Structure formats: C-alpha cells, structure tokens
Length: 355
Ligand SMILES: [Zn+2]
Image 1 (cartoon, protein in one colour):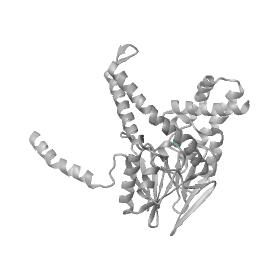
Image 2 (cartoon, rainbow, N blue to C red):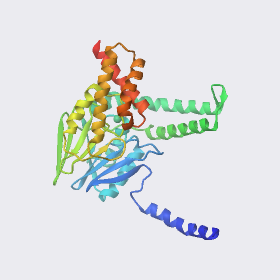
Image 3 (spheres, rainbow, N blue to C red):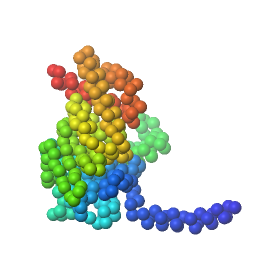
Image 4 (tube, protein in one colour):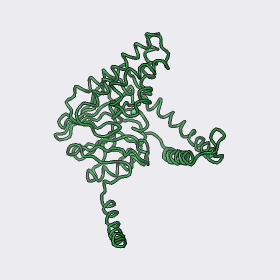
C-alpha cells in the first residue's frame, strides 16, 4: 500500500506543478477576480510577500486599459502589469488612477510610467497630487535613510540575543528574523524609487468614454484623506472605493472623521451593486458602506459627548469603545486597535475645533 501511494504521488506531483505553472493568472501577490466582463479585481493575498498591500481594479476601455492604484512596491506593480497583459491580451495601460496619496496606492506609479512611456496618464484629485508632493515624497526620502539604520538595529539585537536582560525565546528570534527579512526586502524596492506624479487632476468629476463603456471618477469630499476619489461604472454598476470603504475600519491616521460619513452619503446614492475596495475582498451590495457610515455616525456622537464632558483622551478611549462595542464590534476585524485609532483621531479633531 505504502509503495503504491508513493508511486501515485510520484506521478501526480509533476502534473500538479505543471498545472500551476500553466495558469498564467496564478500569482504569489494577487487573486484575480473577474467582476463583470472586462473588469477585474486584483485582490492582494494576505500572506508574504506582503509587498503589494493594497488591491487594484482593472478596467478595459476599448483597446486600452485603466488600472486603479499601483501598490506599495515596483515588484507588486510589475506583477500586476504582467497579469493585466494576460487578462487583456497585451493591451497597453493608458490610465492609472490614484484613489489617494498613501504609499500602498502610489509607489508603483513609476513602474507603469516607464512601462508605457508617452502613453500613460496618472489621474488623481488635486489634493492627492498636492499631498504626494508635500507628505509622501518627504516620507519616502526619510524612509530611505531610516530603514538601513532600523535593519542594523534589528541585527544587533539579534546578535545580542536578549530581551529585557533575558535570553530571547525561539519565537522572539523568528519574529525578529522575519522583521529583518521584511525590512530588507522593502529597502531593496525603495532604495532607488522615485514617485511618478499624477499628470491629470480633478476637483469634482471626470468621465472617460470608450465605446459603450463609461467610467466616472468622482470626488464627494474629505474622508480617509483629503483627496479620495471613487471610480464608478454606471452601466455595469461597479464601484471602486480605494480606502473610503474597506472590509474593516480603514486607517484613520490622516482621516477627516467628522466629514467622512457625509462623504459616504454621496457615494451611497450611486446605483452600484458590487464594490472593489482598497483592502479586503470584492463586496456585494451596499452593506459594508452602510456599516462604516453607522460606525462613524455613532463614533462622532459618542466622542463629542466625551469631549463636552471634559474627559481625557484615555478616558474617552475606554468609555467610547465600551459604548460602541455591542453594536459595532462584530462588524469590524481588529476591533480593539482599529476602534481606538478611530476614537483618537475623532477626539483630536473635536477637541481642537472646540477650543
Ligand atoms: Zn489609505
């Protein structure tokens, strides 16, 4: 029996690996999901290598292609471009939309502009272009200097092999080795990286027409950043949201929490049935947007009350989190950290405007 199963395995294995290699849409970075004919989501895989971080959407426009967002690194953008060539039978990428300025949505821009020179336009909101210049490019410059120092620091800690005077456990060592590998991989990617800036900007809306396909790029106000645009296909009822809507509580660090819900109210009025978010899987219906709106509304009400009652930030974090948990905790992964970040950002906004 044993030798028979080994024999089966021996013959089965090469076929399995051949089948995997033969699928040109197989990728370590992304799962390719057809959404409607000529529209795909590139959903980033959670496991390593985590050099992509954010999703992308791909839209065929006649004999050209539009991609929405360009990932954290050139290697992820190259992989997305390879998949696009397979999906569209080698059509060239004519438009790249940056939904907002965060590094995991724009650091692959230059990969596309050098792959499609003289052809590609990069489209963003006016505020996004401004923030890439004033925030992201200085941040990248700092990161180029800081990462080698951080890697050296990690390595010396590993060589010393102690945490708080005690020898490191095997788990701690493996974690540190993982951090070193991750930081080294990222540094290799950004060492010589220059960001390609948007070449076309909009303040409210822009519509692209190609045959019977219409693509609208729309701005509804401040939310996750000051320049989030959504991409909407009215006929196909598909919406691409960047990080205005994700599958959780989106990163709040640069957000405008008080205005976010009103911005989403504008988005919600669009007639769409499927969403490709900046992070997480393709969504059906409007439920995730509505969950986020309900959370943001309750967040602002509760934090405003805490500020008016004169509570400190730490007191507000505890009381607001407890108040919101029964209704909202089940709807959002990483509830503790994500809700605290949201409370902090809302508190800082409301406490400053009150003064
Ligand atoms: Zn973001």
